[in-house]
Amino acid sequence: MRLPKILLADDHRMFAEMLRTLLGDRYDIVGLATDGHALIEAARRLQPDVIVIDIGMPQLNGLDAGQQIKKMRPAVKLIFLTMNSDPYLVRQAFRIGASGFLLKQGAASELAQAIEKVLRGGLYTTPAAVDALANLCQLEPDRGDAYPEPTARQREVIQLLAEGLSMKQVADTLNIKARTVAAHKYAAMENLGIKSSAELVQYAMKSRMV
Image (cartoon, rainbow, N blue to C red):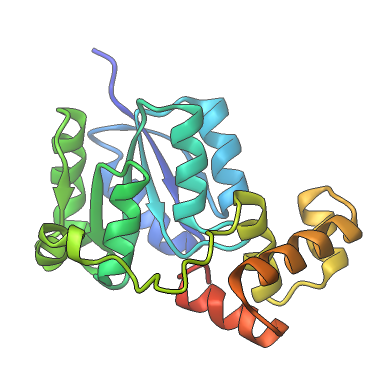
């Protein structure tokens, strides 16, 4: 019988190797991605059944990468890992189609159980985040300003700039022109009512992009 295929995504290799060891006897661990762009490519190439994703990854965070993957492969099961049970993260993860949400510190004891549950079509939420999940409808951030959300490309640009890359480095990373990076940056700033690069970095941190 074919073992379920699992793709791991985490930029901390020691933690990822721990997960590989933990799961290797029960599942087919088909790969390990260490940033969001590599994850999207690996998901396309390896066709996993389940992807275990660290939310805080470089270049493209796990939530944005997962959202792109769900559009590409709607049937894939996404299980997100993070260091905290911030209600914003719980809400965002399930909004984009997550099947599971775990804290990293509980992964060793919960992850196999979570994988089994999502493979059967269920949802798994770590007990530490159950209250947040139960109240998702009340967890909307204050959007009284009614600013539109940045586009997917704008979010990529914002994250890379917030990680300290120059516009040229962002352009090279995304394989676009520097003036296109600038256009995305300033369009996002205008839409969000942001006046400076420092405020843009603050926005990225508040939105859990970095």
